[in-house]
Image 1 (cartoon, rainbow, N blue to C red):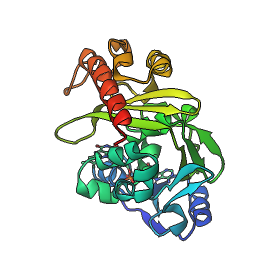
Image 2 (cartoon, protein in one colour; image 1 turned 60 degrees about the horizontal axis):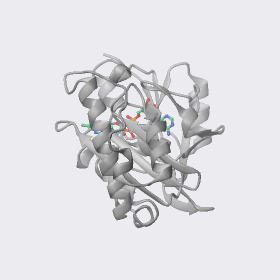
Image 3 (cartoon, rainbow, N blue to C red; image 1 turned 30 degrees about the vertical axis):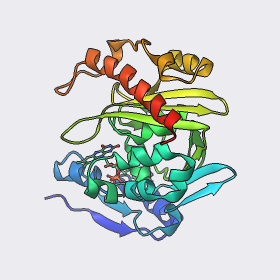
Image 4 (cartoon, rainbow, N blue to C red; image 1 turned 90 degrees about the horizontal axis):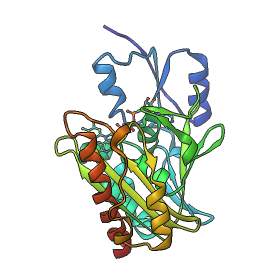
Length: 267
Ligand SMILES: Cc1cc2nc3c(=O)[nH]c(=O)nc-3n(C[C@H](O)[C@H](O)[C@H](O)COP(=O)(O)OP(=O)(O)OC[C@H]3O[C@@H](n4cnc5c(N)ncnc54)[C@H](O)[C@@H]3O)c2cc1C
C-alpha cells in the first residue's frame, strides 16, 4: 500500500513552497488523470499538493483584448461561460466536447495542458489561437510549450496559473471523437487571427502540431475549399487499436474543413 501526504494549498506561493520542499511532490487539479494513474500504480508521489482551494486560479476574464482563463477553471465552466461563448465560441464548443459530464465538472484547463495527452483537446486551441501559458515563473508561447508526448516546457516546481487566448477574428474546432472515451481521435482547431491563419492538430500525432500548408491556403482564402485536398503526411502519425496513421491523416483533412465551416458560421 502506497501512502502519501496530502496538502491543500492556500495560495500559489504556498503550493510552490510545498513543491520545492519535496523531491517527489505532485500537483493535484481535477484528478481525472492523476488519481487514475495513482490507482494503477503508474504514479506514486509522496506528496500531493491540491490546487483546489486556491481562488486566484479560477475564473474567466477579458484582459487587454485577451480571454484569460484560470488554470483551475473546469471544462464545464469554460463550456458554460457567456464570456467565452461571446469572444471565442469555438473554445466553448471544444470544452463541451471533452469526455463526459463528470470529467467536464472535475477536469481543469491547467491539468489538461500540463498533462499534454496526445489526444487532449485544449492543446489544439492553445496552439491554434497562439495562446500564452502563464506560470508562477514566466510566460510561455504556445509554440514553445508542447514539446512531445506527455511532455511540456514546464520545469519542476512550475505551476500553470492561467492561459491567455488572443481573441481571433473567427475560429472553429472539428473533432472526430473516440466513441468510448470521447478523447480526440483527431481534432483540428483553425483560427483567423490578426497575425494570419493558424491550424493546430491534436489526436493524430505524438503531440499537437501545426499544418503550415493549410495555414498558407487559409491566409489566401479562409474557406473549407482552400484546405480540401491538402494532405498531411501519415509517416509520423499514430497507429493504434482505434485507427491507422493513414486514416488519421485522412481525418485531419476532413476535420479541418469542418472547423473552417464552423468558423464561418460563427458557431
Ligand atoms: C473518461 C475520461 C475521458 C476524457 N476525455 C477527454 C476528452 O475527450 N478530451 C480531453 O481533452 N481530455 C479528456 N480527458 C482528460 C480530462 O479532461 C482532464 O483534462 C485531464 O484528466 C487532466 O486534468 P485534471 O484537472 O483532471 O488534472 P490532474 O489529473 O489533477 O493532473 C494532471 C497532471 O497535470 C499536473 N497539473 C495539474 N494542474 C497543474 C497546474 N496548474 N500546473 C502544473 N501542473 C499541473 C498534475 O500534477 C498532473 O501531473 C478525459 C479523462 C477521462 C478520465
